[in-house]
Length: 125
Image 1 (tube, rainbow, N blue to C red):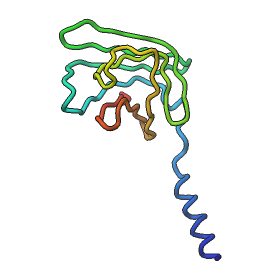
Image 2 (cartoon, rainbow, N blue to C red; image 1 turned 135 degrees about the vertical axis):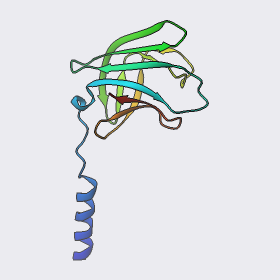
Image 3 (cartoon, one colour; image 1 turned 45 degrees about the vertical axis):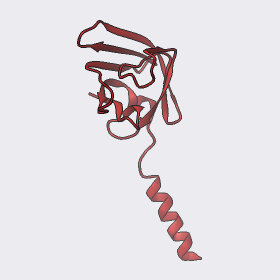
């Protein structure tokens, strides 16, 4: 019984080594990385997350105008909620939505996943 207890304590210690990602860790400028070969999009997108709880996102195709939205953001468990969102890579099938909850993958620096299955994400610059 004593060995089992020591093993459980060691396991808890191993799983809690990485500190939780704070909202302030997300602040910065990100660029869209689109590694999915089925999505034919040739452009660029930037997402700026600000410490005051606001963000700005821009999306520009090579042969088209730049679209941009701005709004508020907040942490929601393991996600980031953006009050407006441009689907630059065409993942969701609608260009601008009234909001989006995107998965945040911890790390240094963190990445913001648009679609983890399609390997489309925002990487901090």
